[in-house]
Structure formats: C-alpha cells, structure tokens
Length: 261
Ligand SMILES: C=C1C[C@]23C[C@@]1(O)CC[C@H]2[C@@]12CC[C@H](O)[C@@](C)(C(=O)O1)[C@H]2[C@@H]3C(=O)O
Ligand SMILES: O=C(O)CCC(=O)C(=O)O
Ligand SMILES: [Fe+2]
Image 1: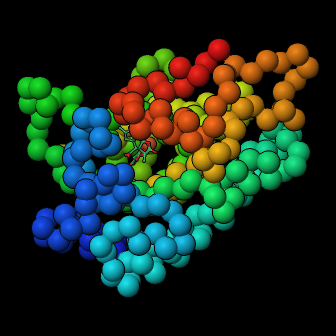
Image 2: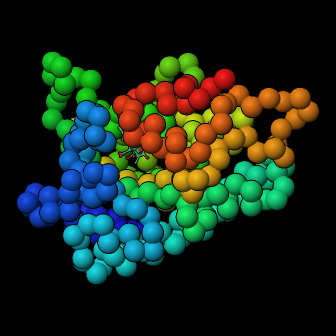
C-alpha cells in the first residue's frame, strides 16, 4: 500500500510536460483539474486506469516500480472487495453468498482505478469560493474502495444536506456504496454523496478502485432479496446503459433519478 502511494507521489512530482505525456484522461490517463468531459473542474490532478491485469497499457508510463506496486495493490484490493461484498450478502441473507461479489469479480467486470493528488489550494476568492478538490457526487458502480494518506478532505452528506468529514486514516479503507448496489439491493444500501474539500495546507493523495459489473449485466434488485409483493423501485437497465448515461452527465447530477419508477 505504502509502496503505491510512494510511486504515485513520485509520478505527481514529475515536470508537467512529463505528466502530460500520459494524458489527457479521455477517459483514461493523466488529467489535471478537468473531471470528465462535461465541464467539471476540481483542485486536483489524477491518473485513471482500466483496472485490468495490465493497467498501465493505456498510458505512456512504463516505470517498472510503478507497474509492480500497482499490480500488487490491485490484487489485494480485489480480494478485499470480494470479502466485503460477501459480508454484505451475508448481512442481507442473500444466497448464494457470492451473488454480489461475482458481479464485481467477473473476468468482464468493468473496474476503474484512480489515483488522485490534491495539491495545497491557495485561498479561494470570488467565483472560485465554491471550488472543491473533487465536487459532490455518488459513484455509479457497485462499491468503491478508497485509501488516502493522512490528509483530510473527504466529506460525506447524509440525507439532511449537511457535510460530515471522514477523518483520514492511512491504515483504513473507506468503502463507498455505489448507485448500482443501491439498485441491486432495492435501496437497502444507499449510495452516499461525497466530495473532497480543497485543503490549503497539506497535499492529499487518494487511491480508489471502482468495482463495476460487466457492461451487459442487468442491474435490477436481486430476486432472492425481494420480500413478498415487493416491487422494484427502478426501471430496468444494464451497466453499459447506466455508464453511458453517467458519462453524459455532470459530476453532481443525480444519475439514478431517471431510472426511478
Ligand atoms: C463528470 C464525470 C466524471 C466521471 C464521469 C462523469 O461524467 C460523471 C461520473 C464521474 C465519475 C465519479 C466516480 C469516479 O471517480 C468516476 C471515474 C466514475 O466512474 O464516475 C468519475 C468519472 C470520471 O472522472 O471520468
Ligand atoms: O479522492 C478522494 O478522496 C475521493 C475521490 C472520489 O470520490 C472519486 O474519485 O470518485
Ligand atoms: Fe467518488
């Protein structure tokens, strides 16, 4: 874990011209301040990878040490996701126990890995006062597993509209429920809105694995979970359809609303 963080710090310390060789993040590669392609901005730079066994093939980065640290991390975090999803299935009394984890672990699963670097942000004035490190949103996938350095910034919003800081802890992982898990559990687990506040003092480094299902996977409440007479709260869609809609949306949009019944 610490190895990957050190490699990320090394990459983000390269001269801008070197980092730009791995960009733009459209949708994968190095990105600076622009998030997605629909006009969202944040006070960060990042690397986005397809989370395959050869995650660096899509960028011009070839540093061996980076590649091996990343591969090692991906293997470990996949195991963690599988365990977490099995525990969730157990908690919901879903049989078979791998009903959720197999969606995220399939060989065609649509995983994305992201390394974010938030440099210290100068005092914000005027129109910039609302600038965040990473604007509020929900993650579209099943679950996301996040780890950060010991710099604060991550906040979550409970339903009352307030923002609560998540204390940074290098030794912990933050598990985020995504929109797809909300639908698969017919709302029993809820995707939570979160954001990263701009921090004037200390750089923040975070790494997140987004576990998405295979593109053709139908996203609908698991039948074995539904109580007698319980109706799905959502219209039918596949992950591929949801992802396409997500990539046409702005970061802060409520992407599930158009699929609600
Ligand atoms: C503005 C956007 C960035 C994003 C794609 C989108 O159009 C809307 C969802 C965004 C998000 C949020 C969670 C993850 O960080 C991400 C990789 C994802 O799957 O959906 C990002 C997308 C991105 O940065 O490309
Ligand atoms: O960098 C972080 O701590 C969170 C970023 C995030 O929410 C995301 O990339 O979806
Ligand atoms: Fe997120």
